[in-house]
Image 1 (tube, rainbow, N blue to C red):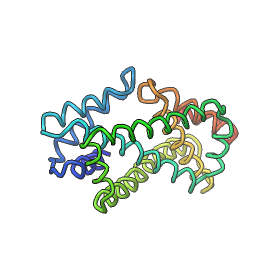
Image 2 (cartoon, one colour; image 1 turned 120 degrees about the horizontal axis):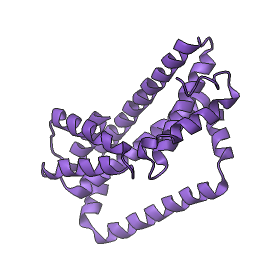
Image 3 (cartoon, rainbow, N blue to C red; image 1 turned 120 degrees about the vertical axis):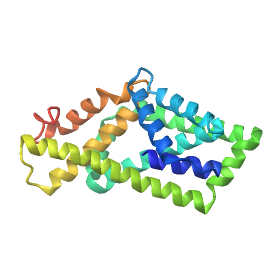
Image 4 (spheres, rainbow, N blue to C red; image 1 turned 135 degrees about the horizontal axis):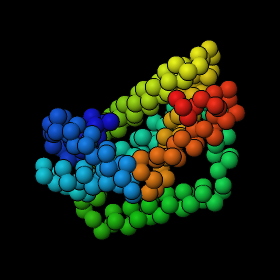
Length: 219
């Protein structure tokens, strides 16, 4: 994840960074996820780049594309491994919540259009986004995020396996998909430190109809 963020920063700023420093800051900033507000890790990142001559706007753009790439990667895993769980989850979500998400996305696009007309720097960033170099970096990052989600799911599988053996490939794929979706929901809900509690609630709810319902939280 730190490597993916560094690639975005370097592409948007045309400036080489030292991975050792980036990795240290990224890892240290992640602690901020577990503080109230769920935004302190972004503040820590901005303080880091300010000391390296990188613009705050470019840093904000890298964080936005990191979020977008992470969401795309999570959806890819859920659709490929267990699209029925994804469909079932969204069917259970209240329409009012979905409307809030849709309205928020539309509002964000409208704000971006307005800012583009007033800011040369934003137009410059968008021009970089249209380049082949950025596309390669962005798609490569999505692949990295997919690997991270699979690794995260593997830790859940190993924990469940230690308590109760898993004999079905379908169960393995389903658990990885549910774990990814639970992480995504916890990540998207604002103000929840690190998604703590939300991920566990979503995961246990989705697993309630499986044979692993009683051990999923323990794992």
